[in-house]
Length: 366
Image 1 (cartoon, rainbow, N blue to C red):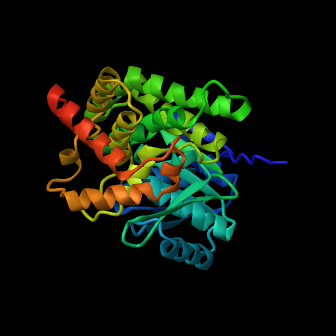
Image 2 (image 1 turned 135 degrees about the vertical axis):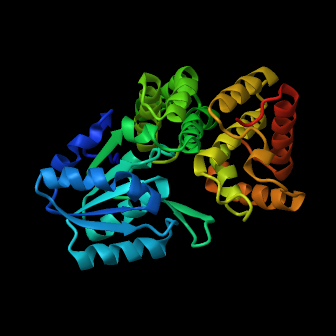
């Protein structure tokens, strides 16, 4: 008999000013706290984090800079830091790679992790998954962790101050929850957890369809609004639930193409969700969706500042570069989730169709 193991975050605090509860949350978990993240992420939250901890008389040990890749070497390094400093609570800030690294290192040391995303690029803040990479940035694998975050603090005011491309990345990654789940599932035979995952994934699409444009305006203005809160719920809560309910087995050609892009030095630096967002368009073309449906998806991508053409991702991509990207995508488990066999010509044709429609409709990158 198959046992489906669901691993949820122990607590989620969401909304404007949610960081005001951070100190009390950490105080219930331990007394020696370390902040982990990239330089910019730490700079954007450290004063508030230190203040919250001081108010609750929780010891703040300072910060540790994340080195940029969620690779096993960095996971091991951070785990050594945590053990050496006697850390009792880890506060992880930044984007998906920083959060995943801290989560994995925390699991290795049996130390609770509180996630405080400073950008809304993925649903990593709430999941028990870690996407590992090689040291050069090429995708390696997805690792299920035995426990989720002890808490996730999703502060809309904090996230409204982040650069727009990161929100766009989160939107692209979240749209994939619906596009990919629909592509790889038999929607007429969904029961139990599959039905919940399907409902959440469609809700992700609906919220983004209605609120993405206004949410982007909120980030451009640096002020949270209702639209941004709705989109953040889609990115973190409903997309996160889709990942949890499906144990990560909800991905298809969009993520396969993302993995392909990480095999190319010209594109691997681009944010995960922006590459997945472009992959969504190629997935629709690969499925043989109508021009009308593709044009609707292109319009939504443009309204969300997601790349709609290869030139928006990187200038000067050659046929050899595309061959590397496509070949790598075809070798991934994500592409194997697609119904039927997918070959090089199929993917190349899908890319050509997206490029052609984007050029015809004038849907450039904002």
